[in-house]
Length: 159
Image 1 (cartoon, one colour):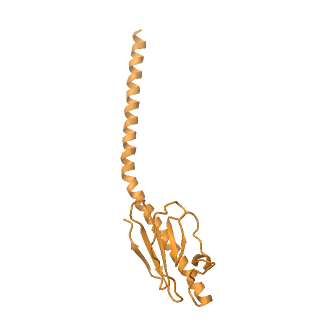
Image 2: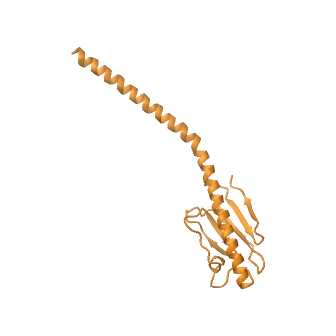
Image 3: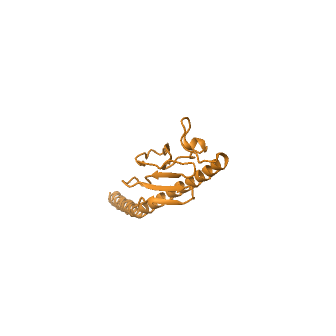
């Protein structure tokens, strides 16, 4: 009888240690998550900015190619949009919406809450392309532009 009582006491002590170990592990994971999540969000924002700058450079190159062939920059016509004329579509899932004249390509991640009210029209000798996106789901949208002089600007910074 005494042996079985000692075994029960020993088992209960082991269970207590296991529960304490699980609680300590859980607290460690929560602290690690609290430190890592803000850094991850900053990294994700940088990736979004890289996406927009890369796509804007490709659009610029395609506009230049179109200009060399036709003598004017591609703009919206009655049957084709700017992006269709330069034969550009974003690959994969994008974070940003892209604007050229009145032509718009919306992102594929569902963050369509960022829009530009007025995009300057493309002329025969000038253009400005916009990339607008919300990289971290806050109220501020990130806005990048590229123009015919190949100047890339971060017009509105999503902090």
